[in-house]
Amino acid sequence: METRNGHILTGILLASGGSMLWGVSGVIAQTLFENNVVTPAWLTTIRMTLAGLLLLLFNVIRHQDIFAVWRSWKTAGQQIIFGLAGLIPIQYFYFLAVHYGNAAIATILQFLGPIVITVYYVIFHHQLPSRSETIGMVLALLGAFFVVTHGHITHLAVSPALLFWGLMSAVAVATSTLLPRPLLPTFGSVNVNGWGLLIGGFAMNFIQPMWVGVPTLTPKTVLSIGAVVLFGTLIAFVMYSVSLLYITPTTASLMDAFEPLAATVISILVLHTVFTWADALGGGLIILAVVMLSISYRAPKRDEE
Image (cartoon, rainbow, N blue to C red; front, top):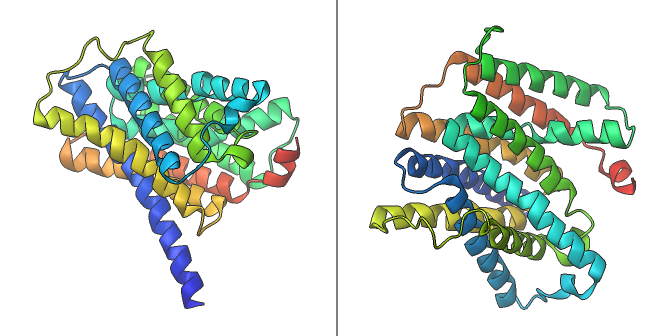
C-alpha cells in the first residue's frame, strides 16, 4: 500500500510540476513581449523548432524508433496535419493572447479548451452531455463572463484582442487534443508531439523566420528564452508524460489546474499584475468546470466514435 501510494504521489507531483512549468513559461514570455525583446511569432518559431528537436533526441537516447510514423502515407498525413492545425495554433494563439494581455488571463481563457471538446462531441457526434458536463459548461461560461467583463455586462474588462486570441487558443486546445488521437496509441506521445512541434516550427518560418528579428542575446534574454523552451516545453512535457506511468490520464488532467494557478500567482508576485475579485471568481469557476469535465469524461464511448 505504501509503495502504491508513493507511486501515486510521484505521479501527482510530476503532473502538477509539469503544469506549473507551463504556467510559469507564459509569465516569462510576457516579460519578453512587454520589453519588446521578441515577438510572439518569433518565440513560437524558436520554441517549436528547438523543443521538437529535443523531444525527438530524447527518444533517440531511449532507443525509440522516431521514424515509424513516416512509414505510412496515412499516418504521415495525420502527423503533418497535427503539427500544422494542432500545435501551431495552440502555441502561437496563446502567445498572442499573452502579448495583448497577460499570462494569467490568457492561461485562464485557454483553459476553456475542454469545454470546446465537449461541444464538439455534442455537435458532431450527437452525444448529449451528462448532467455534470452540462453544469461544467454553465460554470465555465459564467467564469468566462466574470473574467472578460468583471461583472459589468455593458463593457469588456480585457482588450478585444486578448479575448479573441484567448478564445482561439481554447479552440486550439481542442484541435491539439483531438487530432493526434489516432497516432498516440501506436507511436507514443513523445514521438507524435516531437514531430508535430518540429513540423510546426518549420512551417512557422514562413510566417516569422527564426533568423529574422533575432534579439540581442544578453544573458537574461538567453536564460528567458531557454526557460520557455527547456522548462516550459521540453521538461514540462516529459514530466507530464512520465506521470502517466504512475497515475491515470484523468488524474493527470486534473493537475492541469496548476497551470493557470501558477501563471496567476507568479504574475501577481513578480509582475505585480492586477488581479481583481472578478478575475479570481471567474478563474475559479473555469477551473472547477474543467475538473468536473475531467471527472465525468466518458473515454470509451468517445474513442469508439
